[in-house]
Length: 134
Image 1 (cartoon, rainbow, N blue to C red):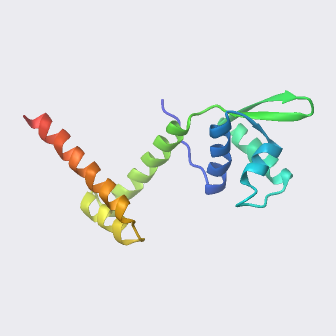
Image 2 (cartoon, rainbow, N blue to C red):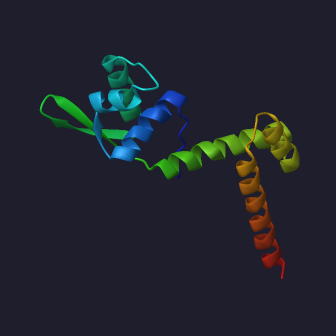
Image 3 (cartoon, one colour):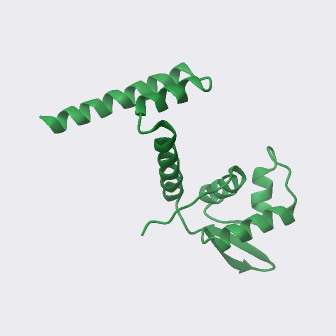
């Protein structure tokens, strides 16, 4: 059975630090987030503890510090969260993929480079599907 992960933006930011570094202390995580977020060490410690209770992290003790490491991969978390989004999007747009894509493209500014990448993905998917029909 595949696990389901639903993380907040802040929880994802903490996880990204750990995925990038493989392991880190509370201070390491706090310092990595410092340019964008001013979080107290106690806040970071609480957040990491909660992520550990959810099964996303484990820790070992080194001196007087906990050293945290991820127990799940970034790919697994993305897969889970995108799956949850896909289910919600399917409900909101009643299975109308074109309406969903239209909404995503008009709801915010999309850079020309991103549009080109989306177009290339659509073209690749079309080739894949037409290859199956042959």
